[in-house]
Length: 94
Image (cartoon, rainbow, N blue to C red; front, top):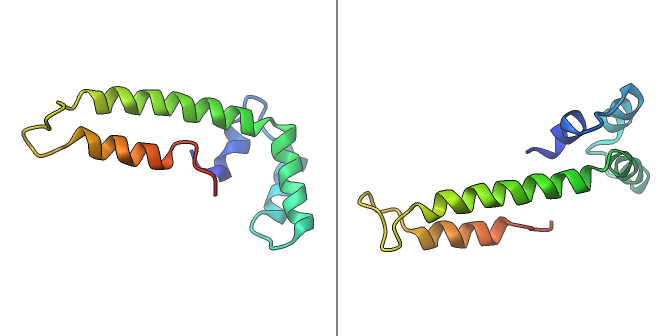
């Protein structure tokens, strides 16, 4: 899920005022713009919703990864490669 789409896919989607604030301030290098973006994200509880999405995706990916035979598949896929990659990106903080 892209950070840009979170306000639209939220349990309580952004209203026009919030969308305008996001459009005016997203990508602007200023502490004021950053504060406005964070306020909208907090208002919409996007952190909580993203954490739920991330946990659900993690579970789904683990199920798929565990379907790969432990010794690897006939076409060369190795379970540990996918597990390693998932461990690097899950709950990553930029």
